Amino acid sequence: MEDKNNIESKETTQIDQFIGRNPLESYTYWINYEPRNPQTRYTMLIKTITFGMELLPKYIDKEKQEKIDTLYTKAANALKTEIPEKREIIFEHLIRDHRVYRITADDAKPCEAVKEEMETVKNDFKDQQYEQHISRLQEIHNQIYHELTQADIVLSTDTTVNQLIETN
Image (cartoon, rainbow, N blue to C red; front, side, top):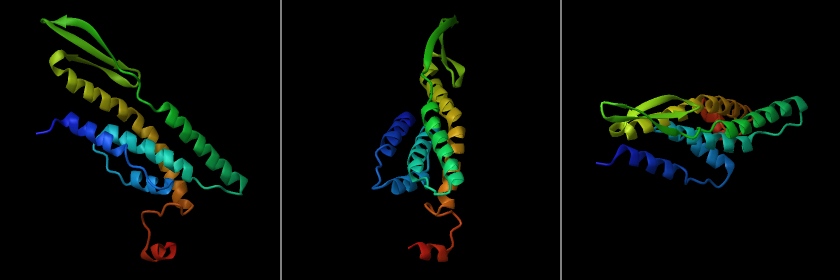
């Protein structure tokens, strides 16, 4: 039986290896990817935002283009700022001959663990960190996705058969 941690690390390695022939193919792959944990969901959102930014339409209309430029800037800033912080593990004190370790980072609530439970607590803490960034990334991705569907770059989810025939 495989260890849960090994399965998750293999999944993360495998998903990072997909490279599409163009940004639209890559975007389509990542938007349809089904993540199994917060870390792969985070990776999926980073990829969809990255490729989605490059697919954003260009407009002659100055007002529409300013809206797209603002969204592009918001997305670029999110990619720079929505990164899990470095974890710090500190020995804190003794309880009945057990060392208690405290795990901290600015983007998650502190956790305490005894040595025997350290791996489980570290993994839970790491998931908590990724979850802190997912909602902001999802918000940006939703805005990009909306713009891409409005410009018919990506077909909307309620596409009719006639619309599919027209686009092919």
